[in-house]
Amino acid sequence: MRKQLLALFAILMVSSSISLAQRQRVTYLDLINRSSAPQIFIDNIILPADDYKAELGILFRFNNDFLPFKKITPSSELNAHEGAGFYSTIRLNNEVFEGLAKRDRRPTDVNVVSRDMWSDTLFTETFEQTESAKLYASGSLSVQLNPGVYHYVLQLSLIESTNDRNSNYRNVRVPDWKTKATGEIYTIKNKPSLTADSDLPLTNLGDNILFGDDFYALVRIPDYDANSSYSINIFRMNTSRRDTSKGELIDELAIQKELIIDGMHPVLSSGAEPSLSMKESELGFTYALVKIPHSNYQNAAYSIELNKENSDKALAKKFFRSYWPDMPASLYNLDIAINHLKYIINEDQLKQIKSGSDAEKEKKFREFWEKRDPSKGTVYNELMAEYYRRIDYAFKEFSNRGNLAGHESDQGKVYINYGPPDSKDRQFPKNGEVIEIWKYGNKRFVFEASTGFGDFVLIGTE
Image 1: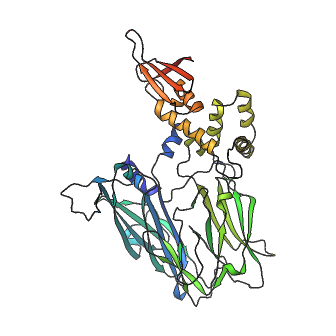
Image 2: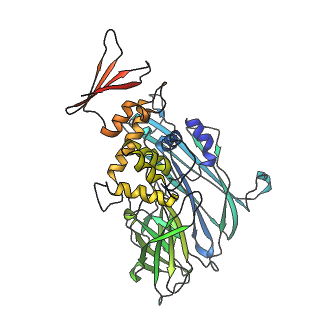
Image 3: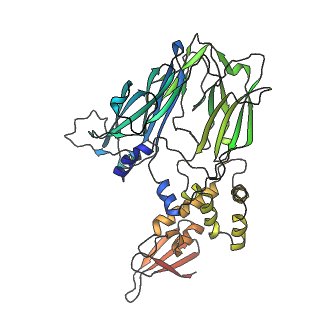
């Protein structure tokens, strides 16, 4: 599996979550495989630099479940901390070239502008930590460039491999800051201060923001006018396969004067967690730092826009989507999520929710779960998450050679509706099939093996 993932590094340049509204012709098995695939995040940002140059920053994060680990042996010559049991090495090279990338271009046809390299060695104490998506390696690479057009390629090497895996070439356009009429927006993790040398930790998840987490937008305001008012508008994006346009305005945040600082520009700081620091500058740029109350937003895709009063044109834009790391697989696809309501509603109710346009179906689906939300006033619905997690568990736990859809089995359906049993008991009659009894308080479900491959059918309840 890891070998396949490494070979696919070229198309995993930016990994992202999929909003509920996105509909694709996929099966539930496709979604299960997608939800369990390891994540990597690679992105680039362009920052103004001294003398009106630009700093191209490459940001990356590799979760442990993507990285191959080896067990530390007594003969391993590693500077490991006490208690470490496993290690992984990772190296990332970056080459920047002049001009746009072309499919038939050979390395000798272009001028190399920069070569840079980042490497790290990771240690874990347990095998479970090597499979964790919450532990990761992250960092950044940067190079200063003159205005113009460039492209870059990354080479990834893991566990001291001599065969680098190349990403696709990516084109970047470095603007002329003297004439650029639009600003930039960078996403910052937690509450910082907008002063010289202040540390602004970047979210470093590509275009993703952790679902339920507030964050900050660092916004450059072009041609700042102190006599005008500015605001940040948040739009919900339409992301169905037929409509990817900007949707409704869901939030409007006024930029207060105290949130604005002049005569600065951000510099990418190297370290385990990529961040920006503000540097005093003669470029005359103006920045604002605005809190985005993302914890109030649904799991979806959004656009941040900087607006000036009496102007219809946005001065800066930034796309982002909510990222729910352990989102149940069904919620990656609206049609499948709706179909899986069949275990708790009747056929007529299901048919009613499935009718209408993509937007209408999503609205009815969300309303269905909002009525059953145990914690009103929050965007995270614990009951919905638990329901779909049970379906995922049932699919994986109760699938077998006779039935590849464990959530459709008798045991799967009981698990979806009742959750894990208080206890299980297996009986092995001499002249019969294996019996398994699930107990929930005073209620019991009796299952009998039917195929010899672990497929049990419900034969009674008590």
